[in-house]
Image 1 (cartoon, rainbow, N blue to C red):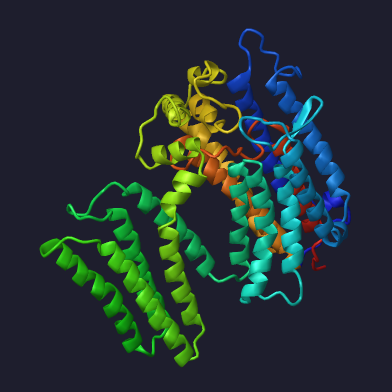
Image 2: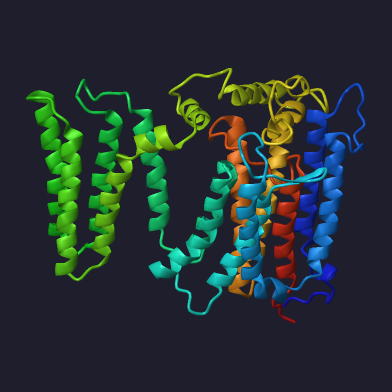
Amino acid sequence: MERRSGSILGKLDWLTVLLVMAIMVCGWFSICGASADLENPDLFSFATRPGKQMVWILCSFALGAVILFITQTFYNSYAYIIYGLLLLLLIVTIFIASDTKGSRSWLHLGPVSLQPAEFAKFATALALAKFVDRFDFNPSNLKDVLKACSIFLVPMLLIVGQNETGSALVYLAFLLVMYREGMTGSVLLVGFCAILFFILELKFSSVSFEGQPFKLGTWLVLTIIQLLQTLLIWFMSRRNRGFTFTVLGIGVGGMLIGLGVSLYVKPFQVTLLQAGLIVLTSVYIIFRSFKDIARRYLLVALFAIGSVGYLFSVDYAFNEILQPHQRTRINVILGLEDDPKGAGYNVNQSLIAIGSGGLTGKGFMKGTQTKLKYVPEQDTDFIFCTVGEEQGFKGSVFVLLLYLGLLLRLIVLAERQSSVFGRVYGYSVVCILLFHLFINIGMVLGITPVIGIPLPFFSYGGSSLWGFTILLTVFLRIDCERKTSY
């Protein structure tokens, strides 16, 4: 039995608040260490970044206090209107925003610059929660899932139109929310395969298979498609082993025979044979789907054919759609290109900074890599390297433990919600924070592409701090109104 005070302050989850405040404090000290002037260390002047960040933090407290007085009914009733207004703002931003480092995503309002993409996250989370909360929503219904996915894909495309790819990719975190609500894992499988196929095709694009006239990357991807096609049919038709063996024999068996001929008789494009075999087995699967009245087989066939089409479009997308700097960054991450003074400069300097910190770090405001500006964006996108250099391994682990505690606590809050609306919104907060944390730390360590997204409640910047404050505080307000037992 749970008995709680009737006031908002009594119902507020103070553990979450304290964890966020601790992260903000650590972030502020890191900003001081990264950008404060040693000759004039005025940490509270609005002319300095630490001073500005202090103002943003105080404003975020005031903003959060205001949000706590707005009832859940308001967010539930006006979710679509808030979402629509933010979409309109994203569209307007494309046309009126000035060019800032190649993107048109910042609105300049006097001395303050705001990035609407940061505020669109909470609006998208509200709209998604409102839609999934419908009584007739069915996560097993493809039409319902596509409608739900369109809620976060639309702002994502608009942000891409602002040439702000990093901020747009954050919206893919909503897929994890849909998975929690019962969406089939096939969507995540497709997403994982898309990333895997893209990497394999690029990584081994210039590697030949035993001197054969086809690329190793293409052969690997097509082989994986054939194996996945066979495995999916095996799981879906366990009572009909003959069906599985036929698909295996035509697809994988035909590929092995062709590979043997190419290796020992006469070399030829085995990958073209593989593509043809995948189409042939897909046609056979479609035929069996109508014969056995099993529509799920159609999805396997569409997956296989779509994967082949996607594979042969990778080169075009990489060379024609991506910007040159984006191609260079991907090549550096995959080890296809060494550019220590260009695209790889940020990551190399970041690794040097973290490595130089050792176990206990160099001390507050004593980091040479960050103080001497060797690491670009050291108080925004690469701020975690400041922690590693000044506070060492111990300080880095402490910050990560704070984030781990925050994420685990938010999961607990999300699971205890009495409404689908609250649960979906709560998991939206968790997934967005997790995505930011994983990508930002990965950028600093050189294990994920550099896409320029901040560390939540930690990096310098008013827009990101206020955006995360709104996102989280709305959830805390929703949690205050959950039904409790007395």
